[in-house]
Structure formats: C-alpha cells, structure tokens
Length: 121
Length: 107
Image (spheres, each protein chain N blue to C red):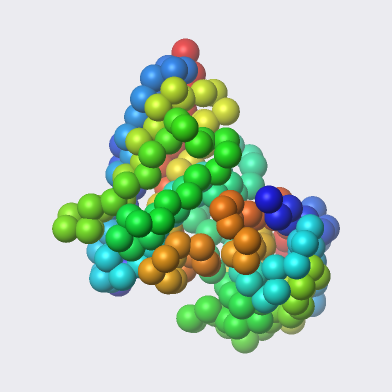
C-alpha cells in the first residue's frame, strides 16, 4: 500500500523558515518524480514544486521561486521542502504527491494527508 | 503559464442524476489533462488522466472527454459519495503544472 506521510508543519512567524518532510513507503521511491502541492484555507490547489527521480530536474511555482527548495533522499525514501522567508500568503495545507513518471511533469496518483503550515505573528 | 478555467463554480445535483463539469485551457494541452476529486478534509484523489482514462479503482460512472482546450468530466449517475470539489490539472506545458479553480458538486 502506497503511503505518504508529511511532517514538520506548524505555526511560524513571517520571515522565518520551516522544513517539511514526506516519508514514502509502499512503492519504489526512486522510480518516480515527486511534488509538493498546497491549498490555502478555503481555496483551490496550487502546485508548488516538483523533482525528478534523480533530482536532475526541478521546478518551482513563481510564487515560491528563490524562497523554497525541494530535495529528496532516495536512500531514506524521503522528500523535503525547505521554506525560507515565509510570508502570510504561504499559509496552507501542504501535500506531498507522487507522480506517475520518473521525470516530473505529469499527473499525481497518490497524495499524503497534508500538513498545515500557518505563517502568522 | 497555462490558465485552467472550470465551470460552473457550483453544481447542485440530486442522487441518480447526471453531472457535467467543464474545464477550459488557455492554450492547447492536447490530451494531457487529469481530473481529481477532493472531499472535505481529505487529500485529492486522481480520477481521470489522459483526458479520458480512468485511474485504478475509479467506477465506470466517471468519464472524461475532450482534447486541446475543452474538456468535460461526466458523472453518469451521481452517488452520495461523489459530493465534493473536482479539479482539472494540465501537464502538457510546465513548469508550472496548473490546476483549475474547482467545481463544487453539492448533492
């Protein structure tokens, strides 16, 4: 059974940093690209970042480019999102999602339960 | 960036009725379009990819059609568990991957 479990969320002040983690199991992690997708309270889905199976290809939404960094550790079956210079508008539930291909840029067939990040003073 | 526009924003349907949801892309995405269903408090679930292929375990009452810029998701006979929000997503031109704003289906 595929499982994606996010951790590391919480309340953080504007301008501070936070690191999200996603622990993957139930599939061969290094065969697939992975993504972070977020959802602000009461709003729709926004793709944040994607990373290919070998970290050779990475992409970011303009809204987070230069502030967020995606990475993965295939030996640990883990995906990460380092979030710096956080803004109030980054407040959202962050989902870890599995792509269906190795090089990111497709649909997402499994999602974690999501982790809430609240940016507030 | 490709902008995805969904309509209507809200759809009120009775159980057993047919529901038709639309998604329009600002430029052609060929057939590189997926549909997701999200219930309150839950993560999205992949329903359809390639515009018309049902994902694993998705009931046959869900069907997708279209290509280029116009797409449709049809639920042939709505069940109570089908309420929630439906999103389309293009994966033809990226980054970024882009989602529509969603259609809320009310039973």
